[in-house]
Structure formats: structure tokens, C-alpha cells
Length: 356
Image (tube, rainbow, N blue to C red; front, side, top):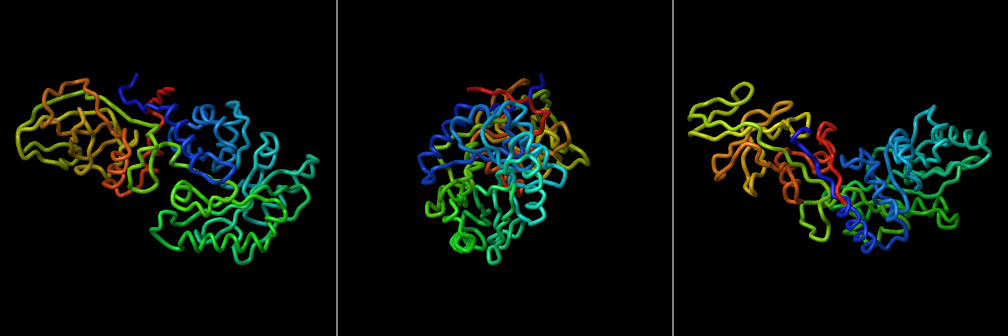
């Protein structure tokens, strides 16, 4: 077995969901497990959490089909909608797509009429993110025989308050669209809050909240949240140690030159495994709880660490890429990205080990 492993703590996942239930004012909760549950493994995450959620949310039809084939019975919303030709898969696997165009609505309605039973779907409203959705100020309702709209939802642009439009403005726009469409009168749910919205804006919880990254114990903003526990920790091992003199170039292109006699460790984890190449010469890993710098260019399969300051370090020593909220946020900051990407980029070559 490769010495690089991602340990997935399903007990922590369940505890995080119970905490989200306590925080939420909404009666229903959708667990977002798109992108292989943010790199954690969607089938196992769904299996472990399905008794604590009301819905699962994924991005694509293929992601939803994988869950159905794994035996997941909960309702699944396909938040990225569907492509022409995927209607039969929606019917076969009892999936609920997002609708953001009249063309989609007509395709779905036709499929529902052929089946003789309406297809449940979720109406996407664009309130300021500018991606998908009917415009909030000119909303359309796909009144088609063969489609049953169960919720209307929008995606926040800056739920942490660091951007435009504001949460308050998007909330106002969504409620304006809801009134124009008569959603309350029709008994259609409203969904706005993501992880940050759930934490910071109880006024937008409404009928259904859609937490994503908080399921996995990672704060959606750089602030420690002790009541949420990390679900994934990624650890590798030192496979080689060598002492080199000052003036030794390391890595491709000699991208780092030692300034002193140094003890250099090689670990079998590179950018294919999920270590961003942008961490070259400026990122960190952790050995025996101490930060050790990445030296030289991160390569596809291997990374070099300067462990000169770690007393008694030896080959086969465990090395942590991240295991805490602080570590994953620091790694993301130095790589000029966000924790979402750090989690999702842990490749399938890194073996997932599940604990409960």
C-alpha cells in the first residue's frame, strides 16, 4: 500500500451534521456531496450521513447515478441541472434536477408526460452570482404538465460578507422573485443558505439549508470553529533522508539551493496527489507537530522537505499534509487558493481509509 493515505473520520462527519441541525432554523437540510463529497468519497459519505439529512445535493447526473448505484435512497437534487439526453437517467434513478431555462423545463416536462408522472425539480434563481438561473427581476415559472417544482433556490455570491452583492441584497432579490412567482401560495420551499449563510445569517435559513464544506469540518472562512471537527486528514511518510552540504541545488531546475548543511526528506506525494505546485519553496508540511518547509519544486509524485530542525527524525516518519482547520487554511493561503480546492484536489491515488 502506498504510504500516502487520507483518513476519513465518519464519526466526525456525523457529529458535524448534528451540530448543523442544532444551528439551523430550517426544517430541512441538504448535505452537499458533489465533487466526490469534496474529495472525501461520495458513496461512503452518503451512506454514513443519510439518516441525518433530508436531501443530498450533487452537481451532475453522473454523480447522482453513482449514489443510486451505491444504494443511496434519499432524495438527490442535481444542482447543476442536466444536458439534453439525460432525461431518461433522471427518471430511471428518481433524480430531481435544477431548472434554469425554459428549454430544460420543456425537455423535462416531455419526459414526465411520457412516464405519466411529474418529475420533481428545483427552480434556480440568479440573484447576483451571474452563473445559472432565471433572473430574479424577470423570473419565469416553468408551468409545464410533467414537472413538479418542489423548491426555488439561489446561490450566494459572498456569504462571508467579503464581496458584492451582499447577502442582504441577494435575500431581498430572492424574496422579491418568490413573491412574483407565488412560491409561498404554491407551497414551494425556499432555499438560500450555504455553510457560511447558515452560520452567519439565520434570517436566510427559510425552508431548506444547503451546507457543504462545514459537513467536512472546514470553516468557510479563516476562523477556527471548535464545534466542528475535521473529517479528512492527509498523511504520508518519509521514504528517503539525506544530508547535503551548503550550496546543493534541489528539485527540478535547481529551484532551491541550500544555504547550510541540511537534512532533506523525500515524501511520496506530489502535485498529482494534491500538493499544489504553487507550494514550491514556500509551503509547509508537519513532522512531529513541527512545521517543515517544502524546498525545491513540487514534482508530480514527490516533494522535498527540509527537516534539519526536527530532532531525531528518521525514515518512515509520518508527515502530515493537513489534519486541522488551521493547517488546511494555511496551506490554501500559501497556495493562493481556498480550502475547497485543497480538499477536492486530493487525487484517487491517495488511498482513503474510513474510520467510524
